[in-house]
Image (cartoon, rainbow, N blue to C red; front, side, top):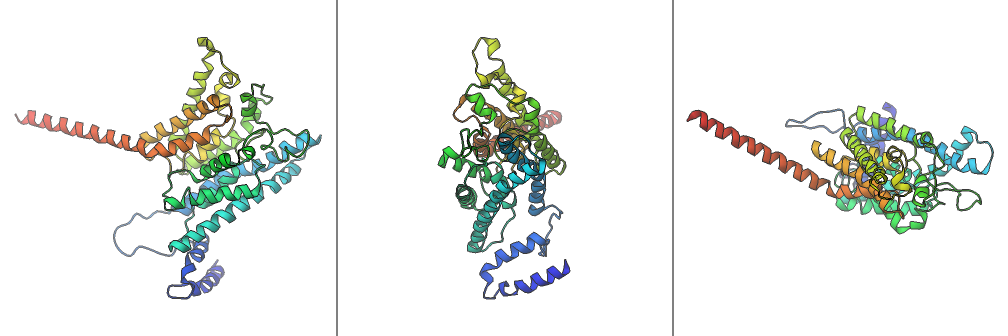
Length: 394
């Protein structure tokens, strides 16, 4: 590493302060901070010193995503090959899926980081590591059949409008990855919904179906998958949203490392379960339901992007609620609205994206009323204490 350090220092000389390439120093410094710990230290005053920084937080989330990503490469290949041939080998399916997913990741990082570097140079600030996670999340929540150029345009919209317009990393009010998905959904609806976008080549090869469980339920059809298939994730869906088992494993890792909020995760699951139980209770009240309302509440937790959204995007520390009580309210409403949107909008049976974006907007309001409530309670206790002291004196 010392050899790399020396070579990098030599390479950075033309970009130093006062040199002719000083303007482009943020791009070079980004490579330095990615490889090494920043060498700037505080010179005066009291400061909190901790080993945790933005880079380590982002890398922790990326590590939590890796098992889900690797499984998605296998599942993407398997969902296609199992419909066109009798036997499918593990490595054959994994290779087929990897060849489809890796270009999506490369495009996401190339376009997104390119914009981040351009804004850093233009504004004269250092490049932040926030896009390390966003650049991986965006292709993971897209349909595998989305053309690469549409993915690139969605990334451009998410980074410029969803983040840089608000001031960059740490200033955005909406989750950037979900902003990209929302843009793609409304800009290219035929590539983001239907029965031919969730399995690779479904629209090109006869006899290949890409229908998801939510799509089947919205059409009033029976589900052909077992609860175990749903839990393990051997079902069609967005690139990496299907495996509830591995998503739960990632959730435990984020909770153990204290990067993800367990309050948001638990409350969101409770909210989704409550909404599912309400719909399941409709027949007992004499209200006729449909395939979505009669679908078992616990299976609602296993399908679609609900678990993936709760674990990896609802817990975004920038756009989520910040207070402890606010996190419980914020998470509960995300789960509650996710299942509600699924059932009430058959044309768009997946609701977690809209639910999270909606609650991103209301997160500051939730925190405001939680804080105001705490202030009122403390003032009330203070007033009661003063009155008690007066009575004691008298």
